[in-house]
Image (cartoon, rainbow, N blue to C red; front, side, top):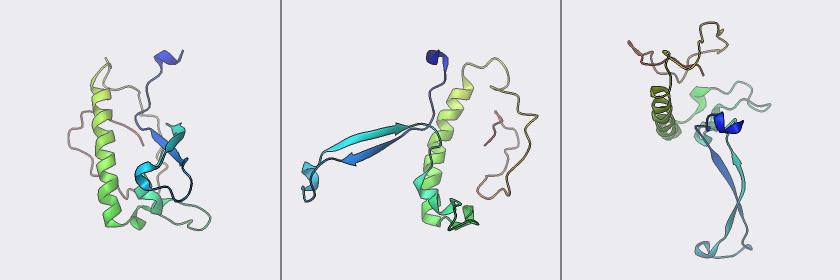
Length: 123
């Protein structure tokens, strides 16, 4: 059952303004439209999103200012992921990824591989 499933690391919430136009901001009422926990993106990285109008978008299209903010979120997620991976696994990691094939076009945005990593993961 679901009680045995892992809790997603990253969640977002869509809020909907429920107040009439012109309501002072301190009196606004907001409602939750939905919670998301899959395919969640970091809005500061939208410049790298490939779509029909920007088919060659890449990591290098993200501004330096937005990269700083995105790194903050990545650091938060990484710390939580490290905590999760540090507990509850009797093996060297949660899954064997040796059979995975590389499909990335480049390594833009990836930090150098640590010399002696504690864990291995796949993006």
